[in-house]
Image 1: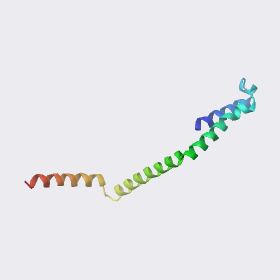
Image 2: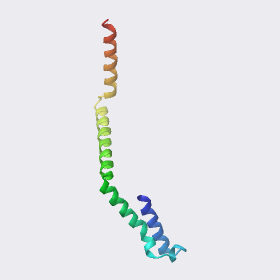
Image 3: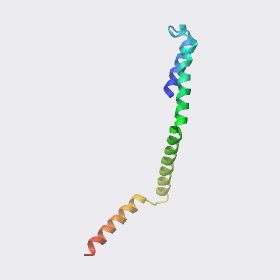
Image 4: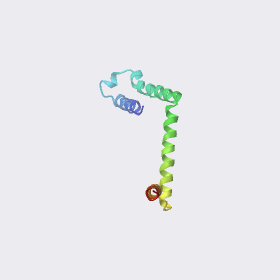
Length: 96
């Protein structure tokens, strides 16, 4: 998608600079990558892929923000789970 835009901008710059063979091309060929990018965006939005990517990215941000804030408060969740697992293993070993 972004590649289409980069190619379109590059072709446009070459066309306006008068560099051959691009300077001899019809404007339709210069604008084709932009049209392909528009079609790509339309298909991605219609299929819902763009929304799913945005939601996944937002969920990842939430998790990292929560972990960062818990660590800043001195609450190391991973450490607490390890301690509880160790205590649980010791209590299971002590019962028999």
